[in-house]
Length: 136
Image (tube, rainbow, N blue to C red; front, side, top):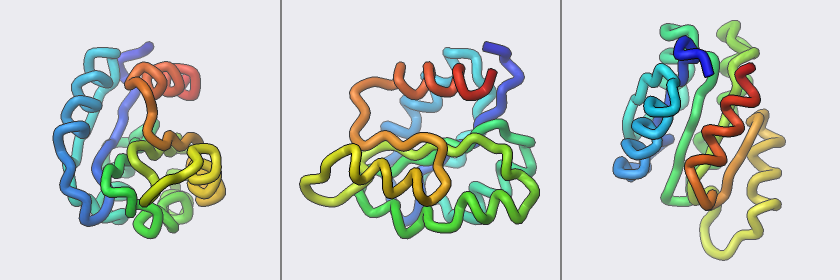
């Protein structure tokens, strides 16, 4: 993995779960990615602006409260409008409220324009491996 792969990441919306965010950022950095971590409570426009500012190759959005979907509805469209439609877009964490079938909730995010979606992923290695594949 080239260390010039730039990733913007943050916890979407009103979600303030920052511990996993810091663990993910550190794991990505240790895997060789250049990470701009916006932390918790990110508005969609902040993620898009940071992707443009840092010429990001990927945007990684997390949500643990299960209520991230409404915040993510226009992210792909906003990236396209800003001229960053080629940015790889990921979302992960607890993507739904209550008992959810992972494939169903992940499919909803894919339909919103995300390249990959992970509902309650088992390991950070999944994210790292997919990023390495998608950013080749």
